[in-house]
Amino acid sequence: MTKTPPRIDRSRVRTIPARRRPSKVQLRSEARPHQPGARFTAFLDGLPALLGARDLRDAIAAAARARTRRTPILWGFGAHVIKVGLAPIVVDLLQRGFVSGILLNGAGCVHDLELAMMGATSEDVGPALDDGSFGMARETAERLNAAIGKGAADGIGMGAAIGREILEGRYPHKERSILATAARQGVPVTVHVAIGTDIHHMHPSADGAALGATSYRDFETLAGLVATLEGGVYFNVGSAVVLPEVFLKALALARNLGHRVQRFTTVNLDFLRQYRPTVNVVERPTRMGGRGISLVGQHEILVPLLAAGLVEASATNKRRPAR
Image 1 (cartoon, one colour):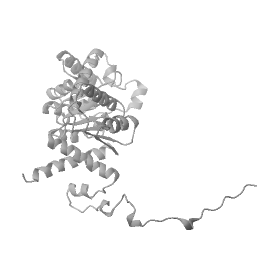
Image 2 (cartoon, rainbow, N blue to C red):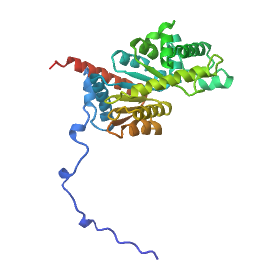
Image 3 (tube, one colour):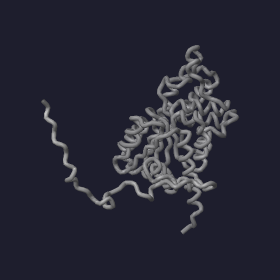
Image 4 (tube, rainbow, N blue to C red):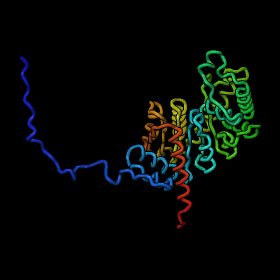
């Protein structure tokens, strides 16, 4: 027969005064209800000073400080960011001086060019894959591959080559193009491709040597940008594999060559936490004194919130009287 253990005696529990106990949540941390007609800064200030809301404000503050101090603000964008309608937000940040450099994967160029060319992008992959038409858009492939080939011949990177093509070509919607705006503003865009991942790689006009040469030149450009990142900010938005890996290698190369890149802020934005962005963007790069922030949510909500906070921070700084 199993012996029943004695019941614990709670009469001997040692208590402490509640007011002397450390508490992580205070009244001053609570949210404030939004009032009709209030400014966006009031909305941000009214968010709770806890968890994701605090991290959002910290990310905005880090980028605002970097802009004031003229230290780099780099943005890495997965293609999904463009597909969900955020290119105008990025273009506005470019024009306001909140972007020192942009990292894209190859698909980002596809969607940016198609939207500039015809005001539409993102085919229905399932049915198109079934009938063999997926990725076979003629003009998209011809223009991208021609621009990349010319860029290779001219000794420039893929981002600069495609940006030049859209900026100088007949594209009725070029004003909302990230690549064209960056080319106009003189902001470097680096494009990091994996051969075979993008639709224009399937076409006979694709040149593997040109793809490799221009994308590798962009990696060298990125490493040069990362070498200046001390005191700056890197945002990784919606890239789960390619850009976190490329950023980590660029950082390793910069440090290997003797550049001091230790105290900076990294911010990962995505709708779920994934291994490479968490480790290669938020954790590993900031071990030597920086700050890593992870913001979880949908791009079409988080990015406009972040951008609006930056715009308001810039306006607030302009309104402050000079000392």
